[in-house]
Amino acid sequence: MAAFPQLRLRRLRRTERLRALVRENRVDAGDLVYPIFVVEGKGIKQEISSMPSIFRFSPDQLDAEIEEVAGLKIPAVLLFGIPKQKDELGSSAYAPQGVVQQAVRRIKKSAPQLLVITDVCLCEYTSHGHCGVVVGDQIDNDQTLPLLAKTALSHAEAGTDIVAPSDMMDGRVKAIRESLDKDGFQQIPILSYAAKYASAFYGPFREAAESAPQFGDRRSYQMDPPNIREALREIEQDINEGADIVMVKPALAYLDVIRQARNAFNYPLAAYNVSGEYAMVKAAVKQGWLEERRAVMEILTAIKRAGADIIISYHAKDVARWLQSA
Ligand code: PBG
Image (tube, rainbow, N blue to C red; front, side):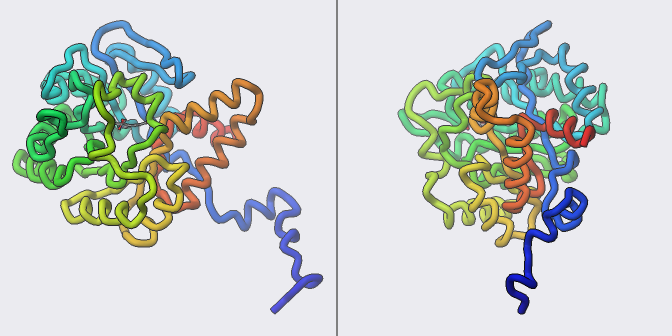
């Protein structure tokens, strides 16, 4: 075995050509998913204060944004809806003319090649802000399942390409798969937010989506951050129920979970670089404390290195632009 001075690991770091030749991981625009917030109404394009450069769009204002994303060769968008009406059962989530349903139709018309993924959850649509049906002070798992299934089905009817349940109810992948199959949508894949933690890093998203719980928190359904074996059981459960792609969320504080999931399952794996992770970088960049491009590329490459195939990120447009100019 070679040892110093014959062995010199610096030899392969001497020039960019050499470094590129032995580079183990790369982020590609084709790995990225760009989240978009759509708000019910007309003529709205409104920046989210805790997420600079990220906007809420009404469906009629989406075309330019969609054209930009498609032009950057980002393969997919992930849609979140903010409805006008919220109620106890989140009925705007599964309304045929709901805001996400309208946005899906519009996007599939303007950019048919762009994949549309729709977030399936009730929290943006319920008056109490929880991801399921509230009974007393509890979130009722089994009463929530048919509503999620109805939501996913209405997204499929509007033309979505992939449905992505993010609610963390037990059995929701099975309920959604059965309802899609029964109505002729056997070809629509399910991307499940399989290991989704109860995280402080969703803070800015809740401002963006107006989805903060009005009482209590999400810890009775989202996962406890210290656990990793449980994350593998969550992923296993969703795979057994029919998930086609599984997700770990958030990404940065959970790179170990991504790595273990990659080692344990031969399924496509997504990671969600969430709103708080984006906001931290943006805030530091604004102060002049971080170099944005290098910091963002390092973060996304780390998520890839941990084992993610697909990265959902608010930085996606910037990254795709940088990759084009590199
Ligand atoms: C809805 C949902 C949330 C996120 C994605 N889907 C918020 C939550 O669970 O409170 C968070 C995304 C982000 O922070 O970027 N259930």
